[in-house]
Image 1 (cartoon, one colour):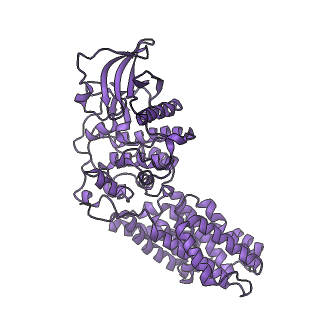
Image 2: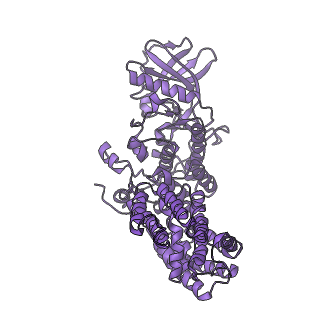
Image 3: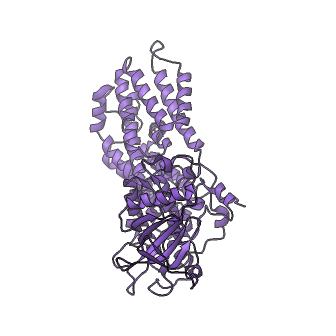
Length: 583
């Protein structure tokens, strides 16, 4: 997608002025300091020269440091009420802990009888918000800014600081020199830690406080819940989403309408910008997921941004939104995640029931139906904890009367929490689908089921786990589902080692790679291209499985056909946001 209205890259000149602090005033306001205002000296050192900006929290001044003969920014915060004084202290404490090139440096904090003063470096430039509105940032600029801010936030998080108000107005873009560079410095600087959450300071960080800017606020923050690094990740990703798509789907005309959009799924970025690298779109989409545990990490986002830097356009301009975007910007709420949790509950309950049914009546601790119901309800309320508890209980129940089965079940469930630690809860039970597909002679279709997962490593892990569960199920049931159980393997540790030393490991690798590459072949955007991609992907999957195993050709082909069909359905669903009215 081109950027209409492209303009030249900003350079030194009258457009750019020093911008620190609230960063919400217009260019006219930045110079609207009456000539009659006195050149006041504060803290016996800083001469206030001109007002740069201001808001409800304080006023930012251009000042001259009389001792070091340099220009600085001074934020003057009146201390007339306890809340304002508390916020001033919070910003000073937070900024003092941070020393990073992509964070505005705090030189000094002081106070007199009327106000608190925060003295920081003077950043000559503009805000990210202003440059986006003026169409002066290219895709490459936005991506580079994202890399710098990932580093800045990672630095803050390591020191126990959660910003809680990452937004375009709090991102400063240093003025470029005549050669278009920023003297080797970062392309952006993060400012305003006035509402930061500080580890170890309960008085300033109690749960229940709702602070920040609603249009960029993570759902858990808007709910007054405990806020961690995932909230900053969400806000940063939303800033990048806006910079690349030209729209913040959460922002509405009023605060009430905006509040109703918080916590809803955003349309996939790739749907709005089909020309952007797929990995970049998927990383940003994952980072703005409503549930914090599904967003990944700053490192994941930074990795995708860095890889995309050379592949995105360097032409500045504005992004013109499509005609359908205003009514399709946000999909229905998924905060509760009930459909996904229901699927996990069904799998957990089924696993529990199957284990109880396999025990003789005297050895079963509870009736199969009762055990399944309890496990399913627990999985809805606490999906990961319940899944782990159910798996441990199954292994424990089998250990006495059926130790050979206990070894097989334990070998199946043990890798799941380790490999899928940060994955959505339903993914933990997804490997169980591989044996079920095997009963229908289409086990080879399993990798296609991973197509809805946003994070590549999670897709690969689930793909490998599906092959592992399939092989262990063949030993447990005595039926050939794809590869067939190793000769003489009936259960126990010997059966586990026999499975691990056979072709299962190679097939697991093939399925992992297939799951990893699926989005590259089937993007869910152009139907004709998706069909071609699905056929190529499924054919490659079948050929690779046939090359590393002795699986029957008929089952391999049937699995490949089913895999292609499932991949088309799953990927089209992922790429198509729900269109709902936001009137």
